[in-house]
Amino acid sequence: MKSEIKTALILGIVIAVGVGILGVVFASLDETKSTSTLTEIDALLKIDKSRFKVAPDLVGIAHYLNTTPEELTEEIKDKVVLYDIWTYSCINCVRTLPYITAWNDKYADQGLLIVGIHSPEFEFEKDPKNVEMAIGKYGIKYPVVLDNDMKTWKAFENNYWPRKYIADHEGYIRYDHIGEGDYQKTEKIIQQLLEERSTSLGIEMTSNAPFVDIEEFEHSMFRTPELYFGYKFAQNRNQLGSEEGFQPGKTISYSEPDNIDLHKFYLTGHWKNHEDSMELISETGTIKMLYNAKEVNIVTENDAKLEIFLDGEPIPTEYAGKDITSINTLQVTEAGLYNIINSESSASHVMEINVTGEGFQIFTFTFG
Image 1: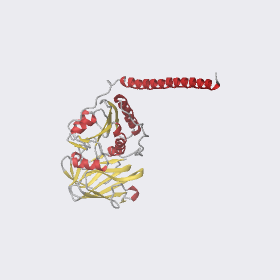
Image 2 (image 1 turned 90 degrees about the vertical axis):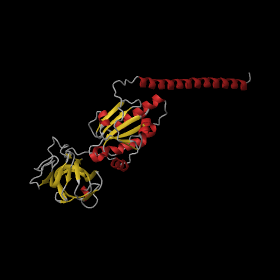
Image 3 (image 1 turned 60 degrees about the horizontal axis):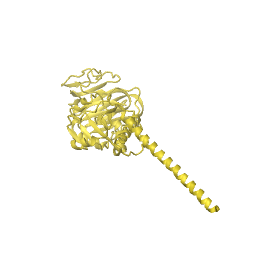
Image 4 (image 1 turned 45 degrees about the vertical axis):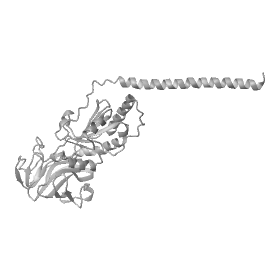
């Protein structure tokens, strides 16, 4: 046999063997891939969801923003749903919003639906115009429902602001978090439930990018607790230092205090005692307190001019909050939350606020 023929035969045999080997390898890979997919589905089917609660229906909703009742009902189907119970004058709620809006931008196309359940603490938070203004301010594009009668709040058996529940695509609540923090853990749960959803529904899912990276607010270890100005909200809290005290429904002339204690507030001028606030009846009045914190926020309603002093001097620039407009002045024009003190470190200071504006209402101080 000629050498050329022998070479051709050998080459043919090598090629045939190679093709056969490749066929076996690819078949093996297909089988492995198929087995892997079946294993994922089997694992998914074996999750015992009997221990999880089903997310309740949204009930007693007064208004829908960024959606309609019909649209929201359709949107929820087969989605991983993050229910965020919040209210727009709550500083703890506000601090979580950059993360929630970022998750909406990142995961909405992958099957995540965020629903903001706005459950108000104060009467002015029930006004749809006020809430609409707030969602515009914070860049909220996902659906927000106004739970003005707290019926959905009660359906979730909730007692806190803020609170996040995450339900899987079958409606089972798989995660529950109270307050701020644990953002990476929350996002990891979102990713896991989206993976479950894609496997169950046979949907292609893009790989997860790194976690949302936003600097988290660091609370002072020792800080003044929230101070409530409404007699109902302040029950069982010894926070009003003025000797006249709370007198429900009455207008009281509060006098200048002799001493100021830490974590208490003191009034001068004529103030009416409401369930949830104090209302200035005279043209001017003052609020004094000795606090410890690095951040101070105030929740107010009705137009007024507030001049703020620290330790007897106009508030220094390095302490001025983001809502201080000029030197030491805060101009209140909208009902809601205002930041008046924002410093690098926690310290104790005597703060005095001179208020000009009959009808001004103050609800609470919060500290960070």
